[in-house]
Image 1 (cartoon, rainbow, N blue to C red):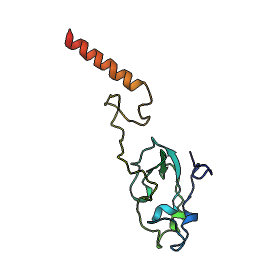
Image 2 (image 1 turned 60 degrees about the vertical axis):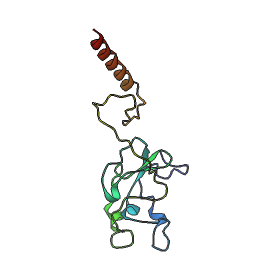
Image 3 (image 1 turned 180 degrees about the vertical axis):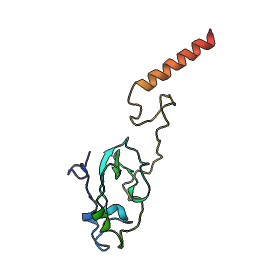
Length: 142
């Protein structure tokens, strides 16, 4: 996915360069996430991957800042231990999309508005819903 400069198109500790010291940090609440690898993933990527600094977060622009998609480098994370970036907090800067998140309801919920991993972009769910409604109506009328 990445941005126009290909930042975060692949896994990397993309935030380290902009937060190397407390005086030279562009983030309001830096945490251990500064030293962790992440990449941008599609909007359908789950945000419930983990807790604390490894929590995936939705970013404005329909992407997810995904830590769970990347292998973490313990040497990089160790650079944040014991300094101003050591808090195990979730990324919560101004670009986070804080709208209500609708997570996938489960495979047993068949509704036209079922926002699953494909955000109902597949025609199978509405078709199955319609078939079920027609079958039930037929059974009631007979």
